[in-house]
Amino acid sequence: MTKLPLVFDIHMQSLTPPNTPYTIQVTENYEDDKYHVEIFEVLEDAPTEHIDTKGFDTEREVFEYLKQVQSNLV
Image: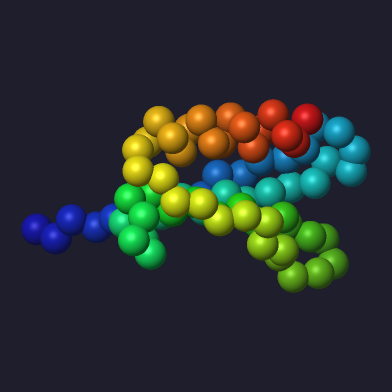
């Protein structure tokens, strides 16, 4: 059986007005990263805007980064 890479999206929203929504895409084994994370701001009347891309070696690093992102959205 072929092992497929893990791929998932996380949806976050800022807690202060205008309560901007963000999509975070996490992909395993992509572009030479063990875990590849991309953040996009979801704009109401415009194309989605790329905010940041980072690569990580461990799941712990990914979750620490997500906590940092969440704290910046308050």
